[in-house]
Length: 180
Image (cartoon, rainbow, N blue to C red; front, top):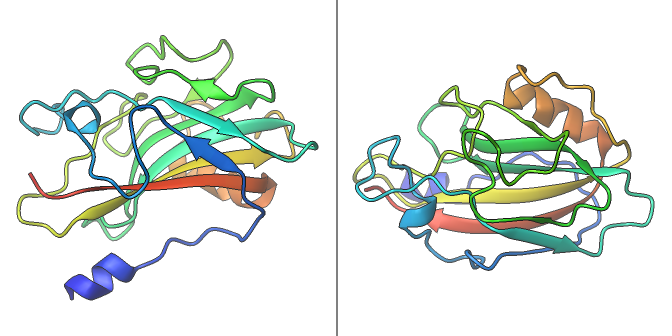
């Protein structure tokens, strides 16, 4: 059963790739306490969104969206930790901590959607105790539109549905966290 959980894939339309990097995270590595969730009870968790930078998106890109999703959460539908959209085409970086309650590090006009705990902010990882390691898919979506027309009070799954048809390229980083 553990092997089946670890190997489960998420359903994203195949598109060309570009590059996402981070000064706070490394692909395949385990999350530190800054990106773990004190809100959800992880001792020392800080719920700080990671620094992200991206490059190499197609010239026809009109805007971006960033999502962080855990497909391994024991919910039957995974868990959305962060979702932001209406990032202008000239935005290629989000500073660490920009996904706080005020979205203080986000550019003007960006929509920060509610995570699956119901708050419009980044929510750190919090796999259940003794649960197998979870994967956190950090995706930067290059879009064929500047505005997906998904209202700010919509759930991130609706954003994901609209991303499916408007993503022309994707940059992805996968990080891990085990039960606390």
